[in-house]
Each structure stands twice: as C-alpha cells, then as structure tokens.
Length: 243
Ligand code: ADE
Image (tube, rainbow, N blue to C red; front, side):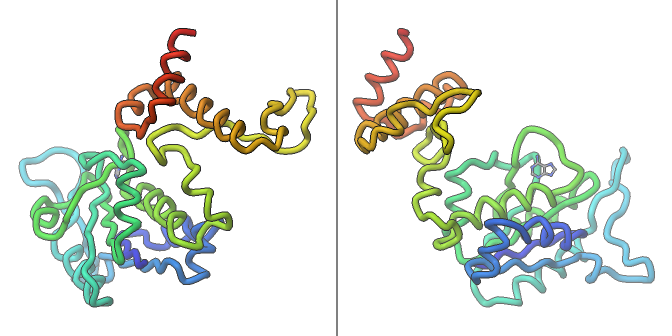
C-alpha cells in the first residue's frame, strides 16, 4: 500500500512513522510513505502558502494553488487511483472500521491543513472525504495523519509479528480488549488469574470474552449497539448488568 501525505511538515510524519510497527512495515515494503510539501509548489520569493480569510477574522487560510499543485504531483507519481482524505475536526470521526476501510485500499492521500484551514474550493475539488481523529482541535493535521498512518500500517499483512494480534485488538468485533498478563505469576501487585494458567483454551477464550464484554459495558456501553454479539454474549451481558 502507498500513502502520500501533503503537509507543510512532511518530515514530521516520516519521523513519526520511522519507529516500531510502522517503521518495520515500511522497511519490509508493506507500506510506502511519501511526503509532498505545498511550499515546494508555491510561487514568488516568499513561497507563500497562506493568506488572510475573506470576510475577516483571525488566522490564515491555506491557498488553493500550492496545495493543488502538490496534490497533482502526488497523484501523478503513481497511476493507481487514490482516495484523498482531508484531516479535519469537521470530518467523520475515525474508528477501527474506518481504518480497515482505508487500509484495504491501494493508495490513500492524507491532506494536512495548518492555520485556520484550507480554502473550501480546494476541499470541494480534490477531497473525497474529511476525517477527524476526535472532538478536539489540533494546530494542524499532521498529528492526525500520523495517527492514521500508524493505524493503517499495523493492519497490513505481515506488519505485526503475530498475525492474530490485530484481530484481538480493542474495537475489532466492536468490543474493548480484555486485560493481559505476563510473568511473573505471583507479584506483590497481585496474581495472574488462574484460568489463564489452566491450559484450557476454551475456558480461557470464554474468560477473555467475558472480560471484553464487562469492560465495554462499564467503560463504553455505546459500543455495544454496534458490536457483533452472540446469544451467549447477550446472556453474559444480562448477568453482568444484574450483578
Ligand atoms: N486537524 C485539526 N484538528 C484535527 C482533528 N481533531 N482531527 C483531524 N484533523 C485535525
């Protein structure tokens, strides 16, 4: 998969992606990440990329043309069609299903705004969808783009050392993840639950499922509506609610 990032700070995203799972995915050739700086496509001695908003008000707005030329250069660098995503607090809130959808594409382009945002005409002409990483405002789209790159990278086949890890994550199947334990069995902070030491895989799976359900019920009951629940899950939830 290929991700192009259009940003005034492309090095920032490259640095964020250089470590851990994303770094390995890039090294293994599972993901290629390419930055495009609108400043390289700006004109004049000052290479201006922003201007004051019409109608007045604070802040600056990113100009259409440098962004448009950067996007055109990115599009032309690879013949495959590309999904253009503008990182914006006005966008669709990102969730794991949305990450999966993006991760299944061959090409995605992430557009990062700075200042008050980008000229709306550019958004209308070039952007397929707007995506937000949460209901708070960042000073630019770069951190949001880095989040998207990370979440996509770890879903690429071969990116995680253990192929089962991604399926076990929080939100896969719509539930929060269960708790995890490792050595030592006995510690001054507590003992590992017996069932995990039992070697009984069916019992372990049952315990983990119940823990996921319990956590989701306690912490994010809103997720239960969209979760893939079995009849047994519903009975477990009824029991947990009662008790
Ligand atoms: N740019 C600024 N804030 C953002 C947010 N919450 N999500 C995505 N992009 C952003």
